[in-house]
Each structure stands twice: as structure tokens, then as C-alpha cells.
Image (cartoon, rainbow, N blue to C red):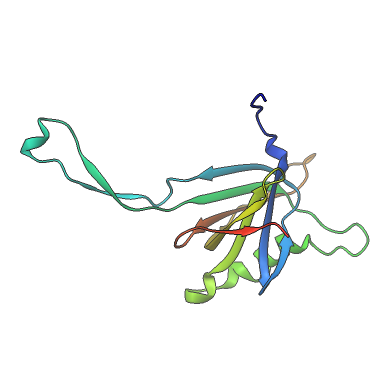
Length: 150
């Protein structure tokens, strides 16, 4: 068996709108996963380190930025349900209400990575001959979990 790279377009993203109801986030054409986001370290260098730096990781975090196109239904004009939930519900939450569950996986994987997360809505825009853009940055809060694909 030979190892092969996986397609970037094979990633699937979902946001939980109500308990155990997941909405696809569609029309994504670029993503950036940062497993070192919000990482904090403590220096542990001492005289016995013989001039070499030492540290301990004290906090781990992660973020996932999605970019794509603002998508609407051509008949009803309704925004993509996942995008709409992020823009109109999750983006308005403060304090504990700023948390939401989010999950992602590659189409070849048999389990989801599930985060309790917060988010920052991204900029929207476009030029004369462009499609309108849409984006969001999602930050993990706490330890990641997994969920078997049903």
C-alpha cells in the first residue's frame, strides 16, 4: 500500500444549531488549521541547562479559519444554513452563550473531531466581478473530543 496525499476539498465542517442537530457549512474554498493557537509556555531554563533553553507547555489551543463564498438558495434567497447560524446566532453570543459545538473531519475519516468553541466572524467582501466572500475563525475551548461518523 502506498501513502497518498488527501484532497483539501474533502474536509467537512459542521456547526451544532440545537443539541444533536448539525448544519453543514458549505461553499468553503480555503481553510487554515492552527494547532498552536493560544499555546502558552513557561520557561524552565536554569543554570544547570548549560546555556540551552528549556520550557514546559502550560496551555494548548487550536483554531480553524474557514474562507469561502457567501451562499444563498437561488429560489428562496435563504443563506446557507450553516453560514446563517454562524452569522446570525453564534456571532451574537456573549459570555457562556459565545460557546457552541463545532466538528470537522475528512471524508476518508470515520470519526469527527468535536470542539467546544468560540468564534470570530470574518470580513465579507468582493470586487466588481467577484462572488461575495464569507469567512469565520473558530477557536477551540477545552480539550478536543471525537464522535463516530453515523
